Length: 131
Length: 466
Image 1 (cartoon, helix red, strand yellow):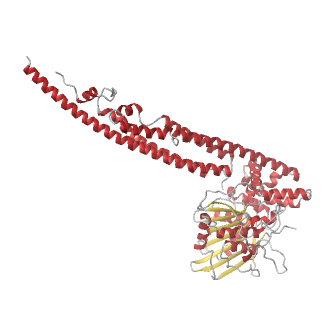
Image 2 (tube, chains in turn brown, green):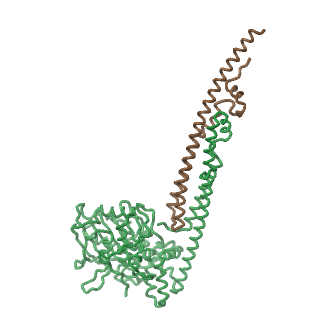
Image 3 (cartoon, one colour):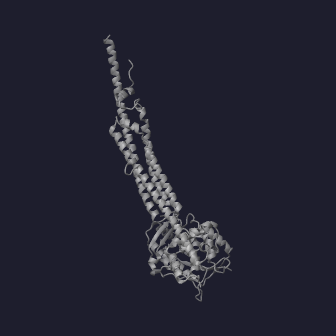
């Protein structure tokens, strides 16, 4: 009899797994790329804060309204810094999550391989015992 | 009779003025509606970037949801962090909205600046109405000239004159903006001043050494207020009959352990009423003011500046020896123009009191300029623009001299006088402001301030046209 591949076995054991993940670890690559993308966005968010403060500081505009805007932009810079940190945190959490998912998948693949082996042995035995 | 400025207050009697603003240097910004609009546009663009990021998350939602079956807690944590960063109270969308609000507020401020432009234009028309002459041309290149005209114009009754002068001392910034607008069709104050300066024709100056003259206590200026006080004494020098001089400058040479140091004291305008074609032997006249206001554009040396360079040569000042130029009004403008061109001398420091500097080129690398401005003095506004607030080598210190010495509204000449600037200098001496300290520390380190008993050689020169 044809034995299922480990990945196909995983897919059959986890019926909720969407089809694109069914083939196995390969489908995690989209999430792998999201980690550096989140970190790059964290950097871009922080840089935007600095950019705004620098722009306001260099602008030839003075008076109470200008001062108030500069103050608000300094606050926004701090908020954007904080937002950058949140993106970093999301990247780290995603990284950990992917490690766990990989470990789970590896465990499932091993289990799948063991089950396939048992099925193969049982099948052979049955072939020999039952005419 | 030419108006005389109030003379300096002797050392101990100086009351420090409240400092209103310090800009530039190691720590003012022009006002332009367009600049504010540019900021608003940049804020909108920033808001759009944040919104774009929010709508385009780097984590694909489908795969993340799919992996939840293998690590539900982890996927939930990632989703929560992403949600907070995107739609949370401090997330991308909330910040995008806040930046859009700021952009709207900035646009509103720009509209108000436009309204201020209209107010300045109205003020301009009102002044023209009062004086009955095309004040735009008169103002270009010198609010000083306008004050002189106002002060002497027989068509003005006492009330009109008082109102005009009070408005000039109450809000010199309005005069500054008015000048800016008046000169705009000419290409700006420096260009307008250059056009007017050209009508005065070329300048030739003679330099005469006056060993008979000496300003009291040369070389004992331990602080900034002392420099301004001494400058006032140079400005007050009189001949043997007690008649005020014109065109006098002083070159001091200090023999310090670090080597020779030279301090040049440059008083301001002697004749505020010179019209093109009416030049006499007084060098420090309106033609020189126009030439100096245009110097950032023309790069030329005024007759006053040529005389100062000649006096330095005759004093034996060698290239590379550090020089401090201390100037009041036109003298400060001249000092800044000389520093910008260098002319072979190491004009390491310039201190100005009540000088309109924005049309002069920036201090070159290795040099510094400390500008004192009285917020009620219209003269520093004669250039139609504030000083550059973003030049680390240029520090502008603005103080409220009236609050310290009790000048009354409309006293244009008093606001421009030495006691006013001594009080601002005294406040700067005591100020903890980083930019001010940086300037004063450098003056001290270069041997120009804080000296006690270094030998001082004083040379007084008189500049005049032949």
